Image (cartoon, rainbow, N blue to C red; front, side):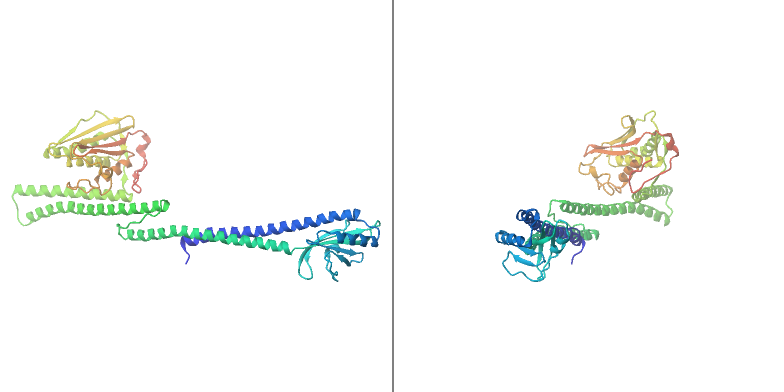
Length: 488
């Protein structure tokens, strides 16, 4: 019946409250009883002090004078309603009481017996009478000038009222405690329901999301941590739904990207298989096969790089390199393509740049990816410009690739480096090239920034730190762990 959060609340909170209230009730009972008993004890001590005025110095010369004075004291005793006054003769027998009743025979008087043994002739006792009634009593021995007991005065107070008062106080405290526990239980059950029920609903929703039902949505009922958790789960479901769609689009795109070159390769291979074409056709077919094979290789390598980054298995072979050489080689690879597509690829090579510390092949891969995208999204007659300069403020080499192509909308720009995301669906591509390039740059402690305006163009800035530490030449390769930025 009770489990999970409810069980923990009952044990940790409700149980503690009940224990504390019980302890308070016990302490209250002990305190009330102690206070009542102390008050009675003080009253008895006051009567004993009063007795010194009746019997000066607690002395009396003979038994006859003691009995006469004691009887008069009993008659004038004004506290008969709250306590009983007893006169005890020298033989230890009660002769007179303030109640007016005949004294009982064989009354238990431990305080009298103890007072006889005390030098000051005084004793106090708390206990039960033979009737079972609990009392508090004090006895003072009256002696003559020879220190011989001639009698004793005993005060007895019943503790029935004090115990009853204590019991009533405890019952009132228990009643109040029950009310407090009830209020705590009511408010606690409401509080628990306000947590357990939403958490149970969240658990069911999370299970459905885990099974792929990303359209699940929680209703936010409270503007607190539970409400924030509802928003987080709803956002998670939305993000997962978008990621699932992106993944499906990615699979569809990659399938299309793979199918197109495979179809061309298969078609030309079959053409050459079933007949020997003329030399011109043969050269054209072999050119298509080689070109499409290279395209397939690029797609597969891109996928492999992405997989390595995701699993943290990409190793950076870091060394001191001339970054201008890698930029030059990447631009050289795309000069012919730019000419064939009627586009202008402009690059004013600087004379010299400080070296950087990085992986030669991976940085070249970044430049190739950025140049490929710039040419891909630039129309015929468009322009792609490359600039390399030293940023003294950030102590980096900056490579800027700018084009006047179709550009990227402001809605798509924040997501353009996300995996699987592709802003322009009309242009071929897997949608993971920039994600891979961005991670490679991060592994070099650099940054890849994109600025773009729709129908104006795009500017990509790659920043790589300048090489400084000579000891880095012998540093081990950097391993990308959990798709995060590695430190050298």
